[in-house]
Amino acid sequence: MTRTRELTIPTDGGTDADLENGSIFFVGTATVIVRYAGFTILTDPNFLHSGDHVHLGYGIRTERQTDPAIDIDELPPVDFVLLSHMHGDHFDRIAEEKLDEDLPIVTTPHAADDLSEKGFRETHALDTWETLTVHKGDVRLDVTSMPGRHGPPVVSKALPPVMGSMLEFRPTEETTALRLYITGDTVMYDSLKEIPERYSDIDVALLHLGGTKILGLLLTMDADQGVEAVELFDAETSIPIHYDDYDVFESSLEEFQEAVREAGLEDRVEYVGRGDTARFEVPAARTR
Image (cartoon, rainbow, N blue to C red; front, side, top):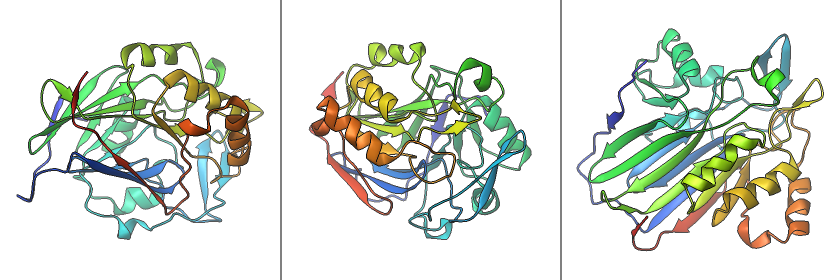
């Protein structure tokens, strides 16, 4: 795995990056395609179809209930992959077989080691709070690993380590045009409180929900914790993903929607269906 803290993405010599408009296309599960400032980023690639199974370890497997909005062969050219952790519903056998082995993958040290053994040659490992700076053209993107815990301590120690990610798109050294946070597969716990202390202005937050349960233990945020996350991170817009794709997900999107209504947070949450795109406009880059 690569431990450098710089990555340069070659450009095609096209027009200047669009800093005013961006989009998030929801493929399914935790898989999205982020397009902004000339970057195209793929998260947690999962392209299995309904009825397919993945193994979660310890003899436990789960069945997919949905189809991805697109197949992996329909992906646009991708600059890099952002992988929260190494589980089969986040990096599946289709991704292992069909992704370019030279495609940069930013992830945890555990996942980077695993991917290297599978033949992927450009894995960039980040410990919590470490940053990889990605350059493309005149724009700098800082990708920083955020805290995450895949369930209570007794269970998380037996599961792959997980990270959230903060993406800061910076047209200049002094300005941040967009701050995008992805929770990764985490439950709410004390270490997450440091995130809004360090990053007071989050534009968009992608929340991994679903209330994943194994042996009765909660491994990802359910509806109530999702509302806690909306309040804690205080993003301008929070978008739920990872909520109904596998049979281990026990907290529905409808439960989250109801909890959001009860909390009076409807104006802070946007819902994006599989195959749909959230589009956003970014005001002139500001100093933060």
